Figure 1 (cartoon, rainbow, N blue to C red):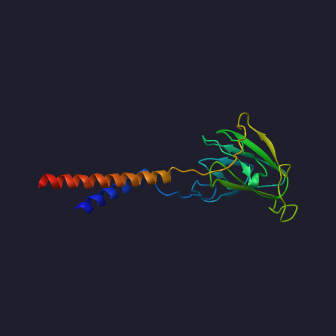
Figure 2 (cartoon, one colour):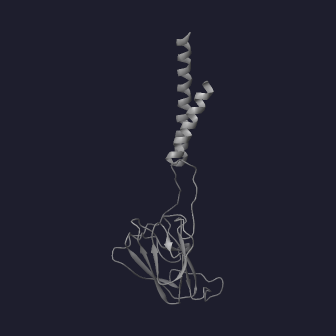
Figure 3 (tube, rainbow, N blue to C red):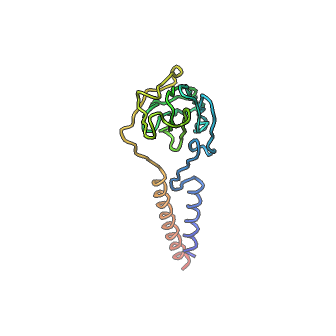
Length: 198
């Protein structure tokens, strides 16, 4: 009988934890970045940021073209080229736009540093870099900022160190403490009932 009550309390606690969503960290990433959609590939000159997703995921443009990112979310995002070679750490506010001009052929991947898995790429020309397979982009080119809408960008904040944090481990510890406390209460209650019955 005693183990039955403890088991019942433990099952109820685990069930409540699952209802609340306290589960181990799971990385959810997909094409376009964590939005659960497939990778999209299109020709054009603009990338829409909506529901934490770059769309299209892969944008194809000719050399010398200017590409505009439009943030349609209410949350700020970042458009930062791989290794920080182009773009910036400045937040693109909801409703804001920022544009970059791509002058040389190549593949230019980018991310939103605030939202893991939110990724995209601009394929310029035939996708082969002019300088060979090992060409490297720099802040001086071949990508330069063209324009941005007024007040679209917040001042850049470059993180000194990135330390991922999560409340899930603390929630598991609290959950285990609750289960332990419930087991102790159930045990004492049973003892009291046993002394009253005799």
